[in-house]
Image (cartoon, rainbow, N blue to C red; front, top):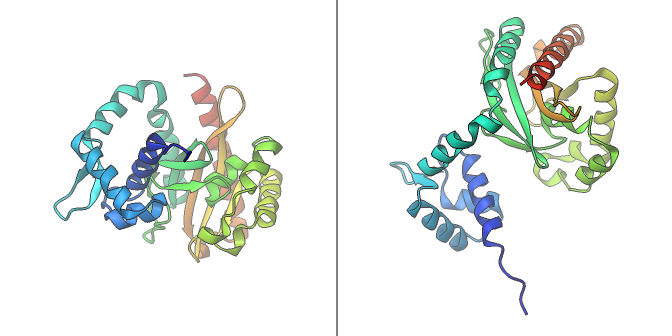
Length: 251
């Protein structure tokens, strides 16, 4: 007998794929590719989700998250939304450093960017934006969180091949070395591994149980991340992450 099709799992994968293309919208083919599903299957699922308001279409036919998801999110927000607490910390980092500052949350084996605040420096990094997802261990926020997980969870993360999507710098050995560096420094460094010339720093934010659940991060061009400035920004990042951890525990 054939294994049953996990329809719910496929729907979740499709919705996550659509969310990765917010706010510009995605073609059916792009959603299918990211979700790892055949295009006809993806189109059927998207059409069904459109009928119940879980996805929407823009004037060009691109797929977007739908109004029902917004309403459901508003209902659940009081239990999960921590962005109001995090916003002042993100803004302070952007103002103090002039770089783009971010707040991300852990969701399973990924990080999801929730907040972005641009600093005064006119050249922006566009690697991160609200809604983008990266595997833990990729980008500074995910690396910061992964570095303070129990060894068993780290080994689970390293069992997934990331080189196909993110390049040879993301072998298990390379990530393990960056985890060791992060544990030594306290903050993570991404030396242009996703987009050449775009550097990042990340610091884990801990919940009441001492688990790394969120991260603050900074991104900017390589020229502004020299050794001296990187250390100063890393220390500021750690202080803000510590203070945000304290504020979130007090909620």
